[in-house]
Amino acid sequence: MKLHCDHVTHMYEGQKVLDDVSLHFENVSAIALIGPSGAGKSTLLRLLSKIESPSSGQIFVNGMDVLNTSEKEYFKHIGFVFQHHGLFPHLSACHNVTIVLEKVHNKSKDEALAIAKVLFEQFELTDHLHKKPAQLSGGQAQRVSIVRSLAASPSLLFFDEPTSALDPILTKEVLHAIIKLRKQNIKFVIVTHEIAFARQVADAFVYMEEGKVIESGAIEQLDEPKTEKLKRFLDFVMTF
Amino acid sequence: MIKKSRDFLLALAIYGALALYIALSYPGRNNFNLARLWPAAPDIAQAWFLTLWISLIALFFSFIAGLILYWMTQSKIGVLKYMGIIFDEVVFGSPLIVFVIAVYYFIAFPLGLRDRLSVGIFAFTLYMAPYMKTMVVGAMKAIDPTQFQAMRVLGFNPFQQFFFILLPQLLKIMFPPLIGNFSFIIKGSSLLAVIGVRELYHTIDRIQANLLLYVEGYLLMFITYLLMTIPLMAISRWVERKINA
Image (tube, rainbow over all chains, first blue to last red):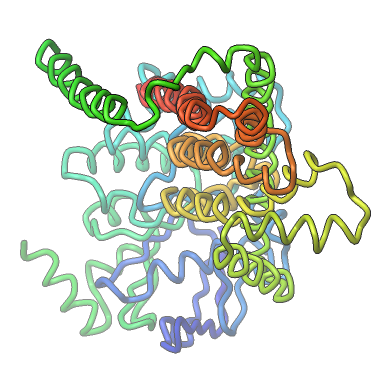
């Protein structure tokens, strides 16, 4: 994936939540956005995915000028997995996936079902095909949400702390699903608090604090941080 | 279950005793004869069904009007938004009877609309719209905000978002207040009598005057409206249990 941000600043309710963020990544597969809570990671992810627009600056993702591409066009190329699964509660797990393929991507009912079934099998969800979201565990629901965002074969996925609402066992379940994606060479940007997981799954990272990018680069750099702030953060999170 | 039934019957018996006391102590009880209303039964039955019919139509149209009002008040177009808000304020500030008369004399009359039934339904639809809108606002709040973002990112257009994702959920959430509004419409429909719509209240009122059976007529009004609203509540509770099962 290619990702460029030029002097991106974002204000929210009069507060500067992103302050002059510039990033340049080429030929990376998975980027982990890390940092303490309130650092602006999720905001940056929402700007990259066009869910929100920055107050100023430019963003290019895989050669597309994000701000000047229509929502409809841009959303064809990306998928987004939210902190809370965001599944439609009145539809079964399977229908949550097929409705997107049928209504948005004009697939026939049979085609949509075939695609969904393959993905459900890959993510070990076949037993839960016909369950409503309320009948699924948090981890299962989040995996269905991953399947739903994958169904239309986007070229890039965004994950916004997909395990933050889950207990440690369910977290593992979801992290394994994401590792699977990596093995399938699916490109993604992920906001995560799981540093060990980030090391395993990402090949690049961005470390943020108070709306600013403190350090970014190849994932191996986490072993030898260049800035004192990242070093302190890593020391702190690894202590427990 | 047995205890429940026993308590229910006991409660009913207390009300029955109260009704009996009122009947026995009523000054004109010797002249009271409900059977004398019998010749008017066909008219009353027709009016009963008309009231139900008016209420169903008003329910349908006011629901749609409520959705339109919702979109207006949520609109980014300032004029539409304020038009919606002003309408809301005017209706919430008016008694139904005054509103119906105002619509009849100040809107329908100058426009040359003479069909009292249609005007009545129209007035009722307008009056109920803000109540329906309030119900939609409440139901929308009950929907997890992540869903709205998910719909957008997944590529649903606004029409698809509403009809495939939101409406089925809204109907389920709104069912109990919708039935509450329906009951309100049935009861309020009696006020259409003021513009001469021949619904249940108006019909019995006329029969009372013709046959000079005032007390019997009032009792019958009481019973016939309850015959509409109580089964409705029972059905709605049953449907609610079904959809939540």
